[in-house]
Figure 1 (spheres, rainbow over the protein chains, first blue to last red):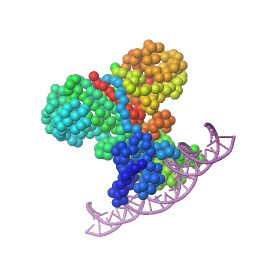
Figure 2: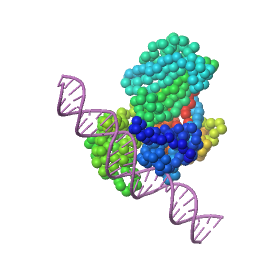
Figure 3: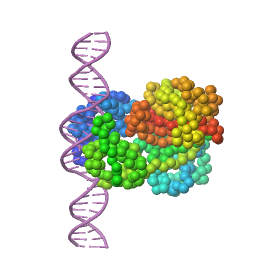
Figure 4: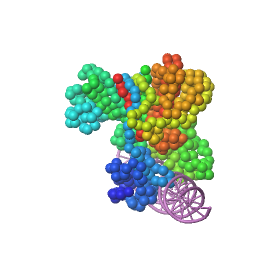
Length: 247
Length: 247
DNA sequence: CCGGCCAGCCTGTCGTGACAGGTTGTCTAT
DNA sequence: ATAGACAACCTGTCACGACAGGCTGGCCGG
C-alpha cells in the first residue's frame, strides 16, 4: 500500500469522504493496486488522511457501491476484479427509438446536437477512421413527464448530411433517418449492463449516482459494411423493464 | 406518520438498522404511506424506536438503495413512486441456457431440485392452475470459478415427468428438455431489469446486497397454448453484459 | 508434524455530540 | 402587499469512543 495520498481539503467545499473516495479510486484505476489486493485498513486510512473512521467508512461504502472494491468482515477491503465481457446469444429486430407506449405521453428533448470528430470509441464502434466527422446527439426522453432514458448517439456525418441542424424534438430519430435519408436499419448489436450513472447523467435523469441503471450500447448497420449509428442509452431501471419477445 | 412500530430486538441476533429497515419497508409496502409522503424525521425515528441516529441513517440508507424512499437535504425522506412497466419491443431467438463461451470454464451447480405446487406467480406465468405440480430448479452457474448467474426455474411437471430426479449437473437444461422430452422452444418473452439481490441470493452470487444485478424474467412456449418454462435469472452485472444481435 | 487455542487485527454495529448548510414558514419592516 | 430577515427544522458531514464477532497466524501441547 504505497498510497501517495494527497492532503484533503478542509474548506468544506467538498466532503472529506468524497475527496478520500476519489483519491482511493484514482489509486485503484491507475492500476497501482491490482485485483484482490488489500487496501489499508480503515484505521490506517484514518491515520494516513487524518480523518475519522466515519469518513473512511463513507468513502469505502461508495467504492463498494461502485463495485471498485469489496469488503470482507474481519479481513479488510480489496480491489475488485475488472469487468469482463461475456456474450449473450440471440437476435432481435426492432428499435428502442420507435417506442411509443400506448396511453403514455412520450416527450424527447434534445440536449445537445452538434458536429464533431469521432473519438476513439465512436471510431471503433462505427468502423470509421478516428477524426472523421460525426453528428452527435444527446437526448433525454421522458414518459409522462418523468425522465426515462438518456441517450448519446453518434452518426457518421457523410451518411446524414445536415442532421446536425434538423429539428428532432419529439420525433423518432429512426423516422427522420428513414424519411430524409432513406436509411433502413438492417442489423444491430446491443449490449446490456447494469451501471451507476455519472453525476451529470444522474442529474438529468433525476436519480442519485447510487441508483443502478440499465445501460445499453448499440451499433446499427445499413449493410454488412456500413454502420450508421452508435449509441449509449441509460435507462432508469425504476421506471422500466426491457421486454424481449423471442419468436 | 401513524407508524405502528414494533419494539426492536436487542439480542444482537440481527442488527438494529436491519430491523428498523424492515419495519419501515413493511410500512411502505403495506401502502400506509403513499408515494411522496414524508417519513418521520431521523430525529423522530430515533426517539420512536429508541435507537441512535446512526441506526436510523443506516436503515434509511438501505431503503434509498432499494429505491423505496428518496431523501432531500433540508426536507426529509419520502416514499418513492412505485415501479411501472414499459415494454421494449423486439424479438430474439436463442437461449441463455445454451451459453458456452469459448475459452471459459462454465460449471453449473444445482442448489435445489424438487416437486412442488405452483404458487401465484408461477401459475400466472405458466398459465396453469394454482397448485398444479411444478418441477422447481435453483441453479448457480459459474464462469471460471466465479459465480455468474443464479436462476430459479419452474416447469409444469406433467410436461417433464421425472425431471425432478434428473441429473442436470453441468448439463444444459435445454439439451435435456430436447433430448429427453422432445421439447423444442418455439417462443419466449423476457423482461430485463436492474435490481438489488435479496441477502440469500447475494450470498450465493458472492456480492453485497447493494450490488446492482441484471434480473431476467422469462417465459418460454412450446406452442401458442403451452408454456413449458418460467425462470427468473439474476446475473452479476460486474461479470457480464448481455449481447443481443439484431438481424 | 499436526491440530487446537488464542492474541491481535479487522470490519460491523451502535452511541453521543456537534456544526454546516438547505428549506420552509413566519414575522417584520418598507 | 411584498420583500427580506430570521427562527425552526431537517439532512449532511465529521469526530470520538466502545464493543461484538469474524479471520489469521503463531504459539504450544500432543
